[in-house]
Image (cartoon, rainbow, N blue to C red; front, side, top):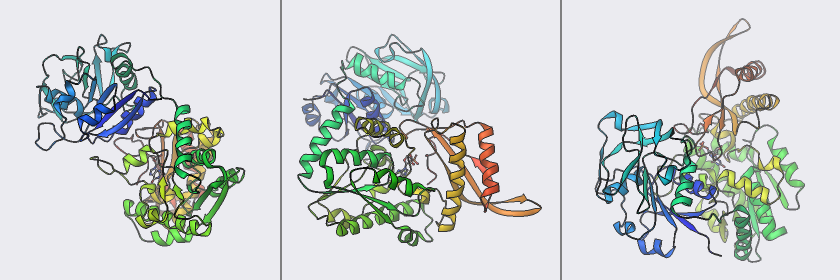
Length: 516
Ligand code: XMP
């Protein structure tokens, strides 16, 4: 059965996959295509609507990305976001210029006023916060368009030509900071494009199991298992598809949280799958010795994981006609850099050395179109226990990216203890289910303190806690002072080498969740 489809046309913005995420959250299937995709190809996909994403360029510059203007005579509704909005305005005869006046250049949370008679804003409040991030400005909107939203600084925050089904917004409805942003996207899909909503996780699960079975074709799979949500869900999916032809390899790189290796092992030993635990602490720590650069640490860890998998494949007779599988999800792909977007940080599973990839028939990443909350939904669909599905994420590189500067076993041990106390107190206070992810970071800053009667000159520990659903954007968690106080007192008293603690109060963006 063919799904109704929306195309997200990618102009290189950082939040592009989030747009796709939002569309699917509204139960409409969508695919992200580069802006260079020929119009004929887009037409052949028969989408019910197109969304132009944001992007880092200025439409009036010669080598900036453009579209075939015929896209606007095809009869398919278009929603332009940020750069996409300016591109639509520019292509249809409007004027876009650099905002020289500071008031027209907007960044961050902006009070915005909407015309709720416009289909895009139907049923929504007349004002709310929108997330802006643009340095260009629509000085004149094209003929046929009216202004349907404004801010105090800017008269044309959103434009619409309802007769032709063209809508443009300067802000980012896809990020959580924009109030009712998803509702606006839903209005575009259902009110403008006439979507019915035929995309569900049950359907994704059924189709993916069938296609994995067909692809693996009687072969075996070595699954890179971290014990986190993504790889656990993938284990369940693969077990459903190929049963005992699955071998799960869990690598303990010595950079796990306290007790974590044992917990993962205990959970998976109960399963009816082949489970292998590899103790590789020395191997990883020796490769990381003296390395300070975050991207370099990530590269080393990603590569070393690959070499361990290759060695284990040899050990278990997995041939070059078999597959390697990883629980890569969409944010891993996008944040590691794709298309025209800047590389923020390379997630470890994007860094397999080519010789490792060549060792297998192929690398399977069946979750690479899903966001975290979709992966959790899929886990439930597959009958995974709630404690596994709702585990807070833990990055593949582990504590290595939470120790600023060079990693040593001593620092990892210090951080493990501090992090454990933090987690224990958060759980005791009942905050573990209210925060999406929380952890401690061992900084490379030292400061002077006084403990007992003596002077100390020890490390600064940072605590981080965020709330988010998709981990693409996040807000810092408002943990009660009393809880932070308990954590601070305990860590200072119980963990040698730390004499000062701070709490990170930055959201994402502009910060990221992890410090490296
Ligand atoms: P950032 O720091 O990019 O993190 O805001 C977003 C989410 O991704 C996790 N993360 C990773 N997960 N391998 C992973 O499996 C990685 O290399 C990696 N880097 C970050 C991070 O913990 C957060 O949940």
